[in-house]
Length: 277
Image (cartoon, rainbow, N blue to C red; front, side, top):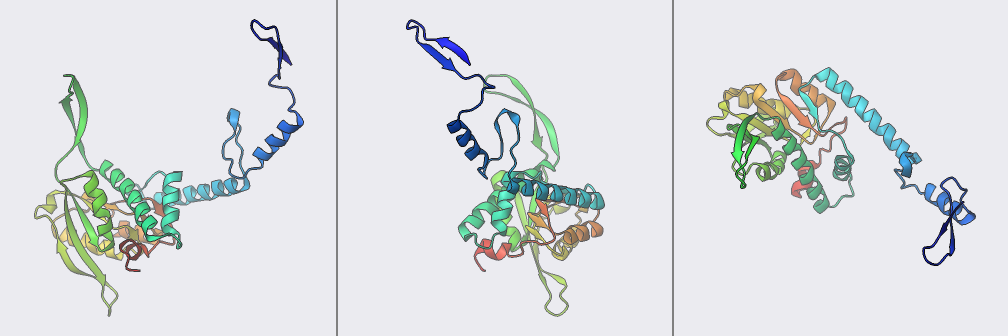
C-alpha cells in the first residue's frame, strides 16, 4: 500500500499497489470479465483465448496449411489474397444462405474491389517523376498502357463496376460461354474484344471457379485472338482445388488470383447477385 497526501489539505489518500490483491468486488468483476466469450485480447500483452477463438485459430491454421500445400502443388501462378478478419467475414456473409440480397450484393462488391485492387498490383508499372503543388519533385510510379478487362458473362459482369471504379477509362470485352445441352461441353456463343487485344494485358473476370471448364474455354478464345496466356490474370472470388488445377494444367503461364480455395464453391453467386434465384 502506497500513501499520498493531497496538496494543501493534508488528507491521507491510500492507493493500492500493483501487486496488491484485489478486494472481493474487484475479484468478482475481474472473474466476470474473464468469463466473457467475446474477449479476444487481454491487457499487458497476455492473450485470453476462449474456446470459440481456439477453434477459429485451429480452423484458420488448417486453412493456411491447406492453401500452402495447394500453392506448392500448383505453383506460384496461384495467388491468394492475404486472409484477414475482414475478408473472412465477407466470405462468410456471401456463403450464408440467410443473407439478404442487399447484404449479399454489398459484401460481394466489397470483396470484388479487394480482388481488383490486388489484380492491378500484378500489372506492370513504370517509374515516373511528378511536380507537387509546392514545386517539389516526387518520384513515383504509373501504370503502363495497354491493359483491359474481359468479363465472362453473366456472373463475370458483376466484377466490371469494381474494375471501372479503379480504372475509369479501361476497356472491357465480353465473352459468353454456356454448356452444350447434349455434350455438356463449354461452348462459345458470343465474344467481343478490343481489336488490339493481342498486345494487351488482360484481367479476366469470373467470380466462381468450380470445374474450370468455362475459364479454360475463354482462355482458348483469347489465345485464338493472338493473346499469350502469360498476359492473362484471372480474377476470381472463390475457387475449388480442381478448378484451379485444371486451369493451370491447361495453361501453365496464366495467373490466378482469388480469395479462397475450398472444395465447396458458392455456385449460387451469379443468381443471387443479379436477383434471378
